[in-house]
Image 1 (cartoon, rainbow, N blue to C red):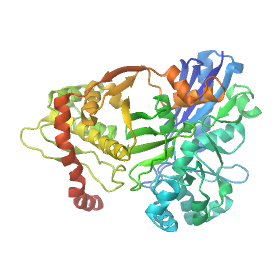
Image 2 (image 1 turned 90 degrees about the vertical axis):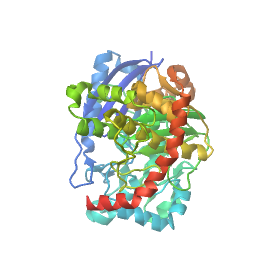
Image 3 (image 1 turned 120 degrees about the vertical axis):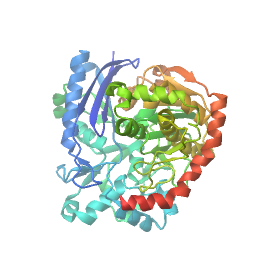
Image 4 (image 1 turned 120 degrees about the horizontal axis):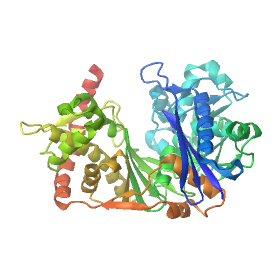
Length: 506
C-alpha cells in the first residue's frame, strides 16, 4: 500500500493529513503559531514556526496512523498565498516573512502600475492588477525601505516553498501559487520577463516554476531524519491554498464553481482558458490542474460579518449560551421572509476586494423601518454576504465562463438556511460533499498523482470525491432576491463618497 501526506501551511497554523491510495484520510494533525503585527496594517511571521509546525504535525500523523515510513511515497504542499520569505546566499532568513494580509505596500503597488504603463497594461502582462497582498510589491518595499536587507537578498520564496526548500534543498514553486506573486505571465505559465525588466528585478531572485503535480525532488537525508520518513519520499509541486482547496472540493473541470464562506468569502471557478477580467475585479490565476486556469472573486468579510453581528452585537442573545448563539441567531433569521422585508446589508466591514477593490468601503444597513426585528437583521446580514458573492458570480458568467454546478464549502455549507439562501440568491442548485477536507486533502491527492497512483488530478478527484446532497432554489425566494439584487448593487456607488469620508474620520 502507498500513502500520501498533504501539508497546508496556513496563517494561523499548519494542518497535515495522511491518505491512502483510495483517498481515505487515516490521520490528521494541527499546530498553531503566532502572527506579529508590529504596526497597524503590518503582518508578518517567523518561517521557523512553519517548519516546527510541519515537523510536529507530520510526526503526529505518522504516530497516529502507525504506517511504516517506507510506505509514505509522496508529499503535497499547500499554504497561505502571496507571502514573502527573503533569503540570503546562505539560505538564512533575512527578516520576518511579510504576509498576504499585510497592507504596507500601497506606494509600491502604484509604482508597479506606473512602471507597467497603466493598470490595463499591467493586467495584460500578468492578468491581474497590483494589490497590496501580492508578493511583487513586497519585494519593492524591501528595496525601498530596508536597503541593507535587500542588498543581501538572493531568493524570494512563497511560504509553502520555504517548507519545500527545507524538505528537498531546492528552490521551486508551482503555477497556482506563483500566479499570486504578480510576476507570472499567467497565460504562458512562466515568469514575466517583461514585467521583471520594467521593475528592474533579477529573475534569479525567483524559484523555478513547475506544474502542480510535478515531482520537485525527494527528501534530503536531514529532512527525512527530522520527519521520520525516507529519502525516497517525493515532494510534488502542490498548490496555493485556494487552488488546493478547490482540488479538495473537486473543482477540476469546466462548469464547476466552489463557493466558500469562511472569515472571507471566495467564488472559485475552473476555466479551460485564461479568461481575464480586464477591469481587474476578479483574479485570474493558473489552476493546479495541468494546463488549466481559474478565476476567483474574494469578499473580505463574509463569515466575518456574521461573526461581528452575533458576537459583538447579539452577544447575550436572549440568555442563550455563547456556544449556541449562532444556532439561535440563524433560527430567528429563518423565521424572517426572504429579502428581510426589503432590508439590505453591505458586508464591507473591512473594505472590499471584489468587485470594488476599495479598502475604504464600509458596512451599512439600508432600508430599516419599525417592522424590522432582530431576526430580520440577522437574515439581512446573511443575505448581504450572499449578494456579495453573487457579485463575483455575475462577473464570472459575463466573461463567458460556464457555471453548471456550485459546490458549497466552509461555514456556508454547514448551515441549512445558508445553503438554501445561496441556491435562491444564485438561482442555482447548491451541492455539498460527503467529506470536506480542504487544502491539505487537495495536495495529498496531487502527491498521489505525482507518484503515479492516478493518471491525472481529474481522475483522482472523480475516484475520491463524492457529492452528498443538493439544495434546489425556491422559486418565490429566488424572485424576491432577483428584485433586490440590483438595488444592492447600486448602494455602493450611491454611498461611496460618504463611506470614504467616514473611513478617513475613523
